[in-house]
Image 1 (tube, rainbow, N blue to C red):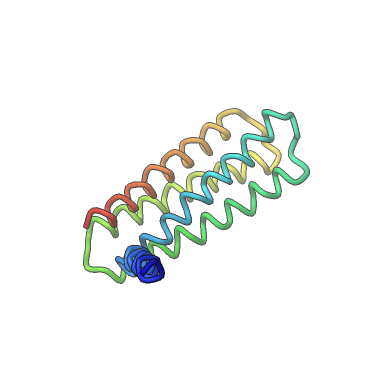
Image 2: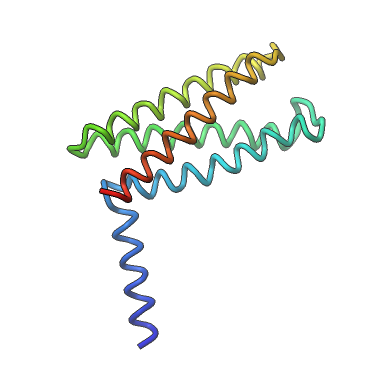
Length: 140
């Protein structure tokens, strides 16, 4: 009897994640990756690590992962018939591009607070748009 309830829970989770052509699961993964990206990025100024070492490496690889996930979410959303989901996914990619563009300048040698602010705006926009995607998928 216990195995059946566990099996039913697994099936319900699979149905939830596969809803909207896997946009739900991808957005969950992007939010978790954003949390790690924030941790690695904030470790640099908090612990005065400079732009070398494992924290910056984790931050850059996390940013690459976010970019790939954003493109995958947009591609999966384009396969649906829901205009709102497509629009939020496109907005998500645009915020990722803002953060990446500002990050390239910041880590490219122009250490200026305005570029860090640009990365922060892109990060917050990405976090809100990804959360919007997740809530939209869960509510529809």
